[in-house]
Image 1: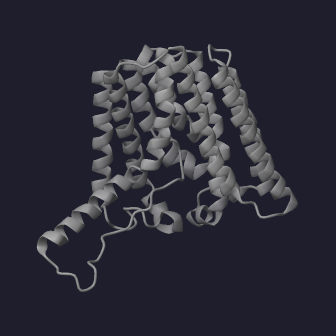
Image 2 (image 1 turned 120 degrees about the vertical axis):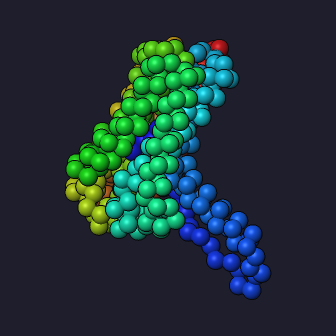
Length: 322
């Protein structure tokens, strides 16, 4: 699954042989094949897939109260990775006009012409179909439906509509980014319960400050592409203030999970990490108000660390109680 994210894995096109090197047909073919493989992997945006798996596995551990069957874990991890990769590949296909004009994305496989649009579309649809079949065979109906819905929401609702029409694309696009916790929970239990929705809330509210920081950094890129990200259409003060608000909501959602059967390992970790996230957003807002160098990537990188800490704490807590 993919969370509505501006993070990308930059990929070079085919490499020229080293000057003076012996050019053999096999060497040229191997370089070309390696380059194409890297390009197709880049379409899936592996960094985003990794981040999604960080939230899926703890959700499964918590749902089971320990370690589920390795067969189920493997099916969800493979199926979820393929689903996220599919959504990202289709996003690259649908956003190829935008990626062409943004400096940050101009070296992605489609604007770099290392993969054709038709090949990217077929690749994305194939991954999507494979992921849904895997989930249907090895999990249950609810997890399968949620997986298909996450792919459809990311590409049809977020990419084609929200991203291009509203400055709140980051907020509402966060629905698909938070879906992996529901999918992981549903795969284990066949249903959804309040702890699953609390984890959903953590990821959903976490995404605006995380991606607003990146959008501040690449504000000119988004403006050039005509994408109404909040930092493009609103003042930095408003962006900073909203980041603070969503950070507080993230902390509240994480603390709401504590009384739902979680122990002190989780509670202390969530409170400490959430307080640090709130402090970092306040620091960003303070720099904006004082007219200082905003340094948004400090918040971006810390927010990634925050999410990892919280969900590792969920996993540890579930294993200790399992």
